[in-house]
Image (cartoon, rainbow, N blue to C red; front, side, top):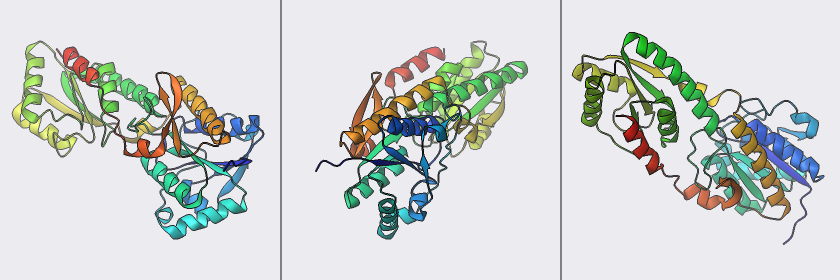
Amino acid sequence: MIKTIKKIGVLTSGGDSPGMNAAIRSVVRTCAYYKVECLGIYRGYQGMIEGDFKDMGPRSVHNIVNKGGTILKSARSKEFMTAEGRKLAYENLVKENVDALVVIGGDGSFTGALVFNKEYGIPVMGIPGTIDNDIFGTSHTLGFDTALNTVVEAIDKIRDTASSHNRLFLVEVMGRDAGHIALNAGIGAGAEEILIPEENMGLERLLESLRRSKLSGKSSSIVVIAEGDKIGKSVFELKDYIDQNLQEYDVRVSVLGHMQRGGAPSCFDRVLASRLGVKAVESLLQNKTGYMVGLHNDKIELTPLEQAIKGHSGIDRELLRVSDIMSV
């Protein structure tokens, strides 16, 4: 059945990532362009359950394109996982005359949107926002490029200290289940080794690589480690192991942590967010639902939410090969 969309709700759910504000801005202004009302939903699905809403127009999103985080805030919602919670959310949307939703987030947010759509028939469109770049159906998620630049800048500074003191630095970056940040930033920052969840390098191979580096004349080294890497239980246990087996190295650990999720979004993320927001709203106005908007070969295309959730965003094998060559 063709439904006229008169009011669209927008929310950011799960974790934050640089570029979310630019996406909110894009959704709100695209709605204004097409003379459709837009409702900001604060604190994700929890805010939907509690009726934490605010009408948004073009001027309500000025000066946010350059800001990290999300002005709509973000929260996990166990209540939305229950049928009772979703019923409350639906009733609140009906009161506000909301006809469709744009959900900016990751797998968990998309799963909630899909269930909500199937139960109540409210059209939904997803925009991928996570620094991990681990969502199927897009080459880049919002925040990934910014996180890479943050990590590379941090490693460049750490290398200055490593070189000055002839030290080995183990730098842990985010990526519990995916090594996209570690692999790309590691190559960009010239790391000697890169450890990611997708590839179990093994302790002995790592030690042998570090020995070769020492013998080749390298006075300092950087090893970039995704937090989900399987080679050790933690980066600190890995340090202890290297200390015991390669005593010629003075080993230090740097955990970059949540600094990777903050900061002003890069130009790439701002432009991507703007394109994704426009496509999301226009797709809803064309009576499309249950999709995620994503980047494919520099074109914005739609992927069914179910595929985006269940699909696997594999690591780039060519980048692994490049990494091996660069570590000589």
